[in-house]
Amino acid sequence: MLRKLTRSFRKATDEDYSEKQNQTQENMADLTNRYPDNVFGKYYVDSQCIDCDLCRETAPSNFKRNDDGGHSFVYKQPETPEEEEQCREAKEGCPVEAIGDDGKAAEVAAQASEVGQG
Ligand code: SF4
Image 1 (tube, protein in one colour):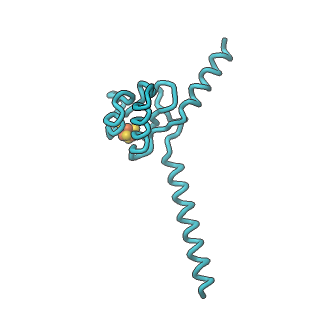
Image 2: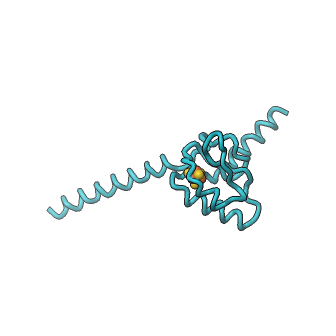
Image 3: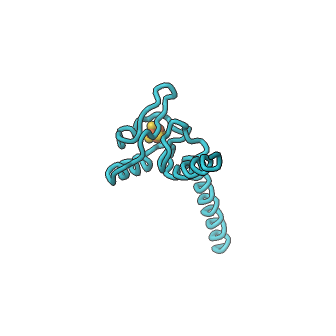
């Protein structure tokens, strides 16, 4: 009986963990959905942005609003430790996880493409 209960508890826990993992992966910012008005570099905002203003309040030197689109974007990558900290804070505080910090990959890809064309 105890063994059966332990097994069903473990199964429920594993399913719960797996579901949370999937939700986290679904919510994470996605480089392929990055708004084109982000400047190249580490941080970017993707299409999940709900225009809540938190990032613009937290890191005003780096995030701006696209008034036509109704969303935020990164207009300047952090250049000081203070700005880096503010961007990190904005990323962690974003309610829909629309801020990514792996945008460097887009920059590298763009540079590689330019080199290839040259
Ligand atoms: S904190 Fe997130 S949802 Fe809010 S405006 Fe910034 S990117 Fe958009």
